[in-house]
Length: 165
Image 1 (cartoon, rainbow, N blue to C red):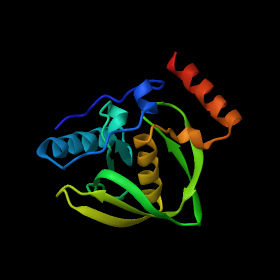
Image 2: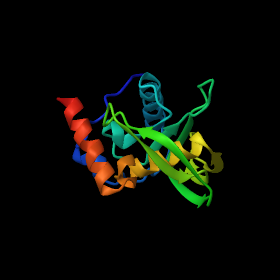
Image 3: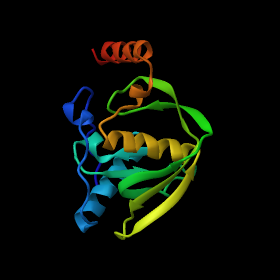
Image 4: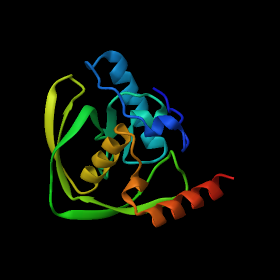
């Protein structure tokens, strides 16, 4: 397949909600493969379609150590989030060179359409859970730094602008 170019912050599409996927087609499967290729090239542990300019509710996540275990998701939604929290350094190819420690629920149950077009529920823990929450944020037009307070967010964005020059 192919590696796609990631949008650069502050592209307006990164702040827009993505449209639901009506059904999983061969075109969607091809797009998922492009997303996996793009994620592997970064390298990263997840990617949402809006990050590459495709405004559909599609995401891929692979937090496995061996890689090659990518979870393909259409219309993912969180059904349950644990009360126990976990913090992790998060970043985005849309805003290269910067990262921030973000606290999110340690475990989530997510429902989505899988690559066979069937509804599936999965319990995800640790980095898998963090990544799927990060991708769902992208599908809603949110960035990881939206979880920061104003001062920390402003500092991060200033640093990103400086690096982009």
